[in-house]
Amino acid sequence: MTVKVLYFARYREALGLDTETVDGEFATLDALRAHLALRGGVWQVLAEQNLMCARNEELCQLDEPLVSGDEVAFFPTVTGG
Amino acid sequence: MAIRVQTAAFDPGVEVNALHAANVGVGAVVSFIGYVRDFNEGREIAGMFLEHYPGMTEKALGKITAEAEQRWPLLRLDVLHRVGALEPGEPIVFVGVASAHRQAAFDACAFVMDYLKTRAPFWKKETSGDGPHWVEGRDSDHAAAGRWVDKT
Image (cartoon, rainbow over all chains, first blue to last red; front, side, top):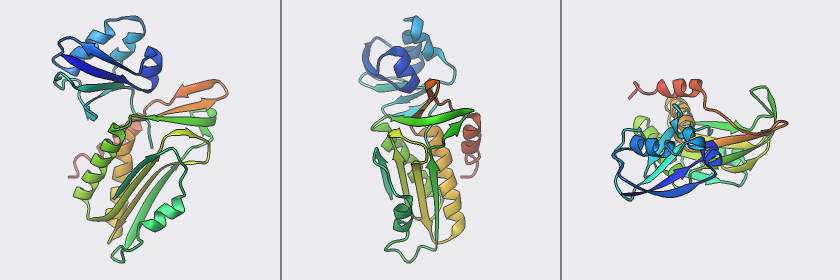
């Protein structure tokens, strides 16, 4: 499957990347996150406990299933308002 | 019902007055305006940058306002949020609610702000004397949002 992955705020800066396309087989967002964190170094930021995520522009939990073509986003706790 | 995400400044007075314009059925208007402070977490703040997730931001705010409209009898609900560079003293966010009676307006306004704080994809980066830093989320914001969960 192919998914588009977006990173925001502190994660975007730490990774030096705002978006990428990732190929592989990931049952859930958590599986994708684990795959990315395995890159090591700065990517460990994705192992943070208070990480938030979205699938196709909707907030979701890490156990949310993934489908090819999905847009996934990982970001730190939101701080608007 | 209006949702606006914009870099331009806005006039809170104009926004408040618009809430009861053209509707004499409105008996109550409640508004919340959030401002950039010049001091936060022990640091003097020179400025701020608000990042967001274009596309999801509007969807998330739409979901929050739709839920508020389901829970309370509202005549109008406007949400305005700025993004980009802001200076201390500038308004960041406006939530305005119009209803026939005050309680629905008070409650809906607090609900929208509590949910916006924890579910809308905005991130604040403050600039102070020791450089820029990302604002971290607060547990108290999640506690505030949690108080609405059992009130369906």
